[in-house]
Image (cartoon, rainbow over all chains, first blue to last red; front, side):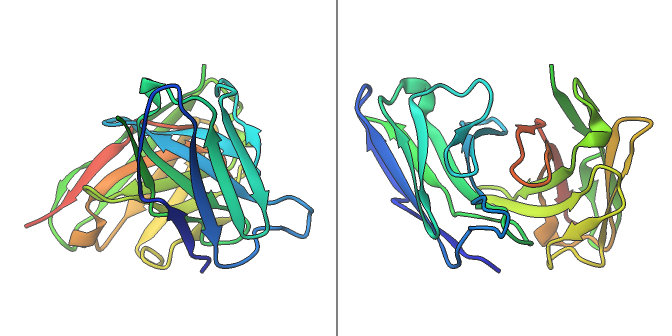
Length: 112
Length: 116
């Protein structure tokens, strides 16, 4: 199984400041179809997960453009250009290049 | 508007069974793979299973293989998860999600508690 790791596991951010979360996979997430299957999710307190990014850098419909994803191979980054109070919660990366799908442990983001 | 509404959770004894349902609306259900993900209390997200749009292919996490069966009724726009031989470690909130690769939308979840 592909192991996903995230750093940091906890992050405290001042509103209006940027934030960055790293996600690394134990194997390349590049598929033979040329796409890289890394996605990001946010779970706000007391809510189900919501989808942010797919295939490394594509935002799902309705996701604000302050969220961006980058990376390749085994190293990926989620960036929030200017953190807002509503961005608090736990962020998860997930690989879907192979089965079983696997999630990272999550990065908890709160506001200073 | 996409909606996914899970139901069927509850308290069950170890070794028991439950069937979860997920009613879908707002999109062409039969054209989309679907995913079940669970979250144990205070823990992270744990992928459980996926099914293709036509329902002909299913895949499971090793932790549930042989005990859980995912299926769908495209005429009813409904997804199912039959859970047998339940264990304490299956206690979790179970979410259904739209998409078999990167889920694009999630239901609110249904809680399964396995305890005597």
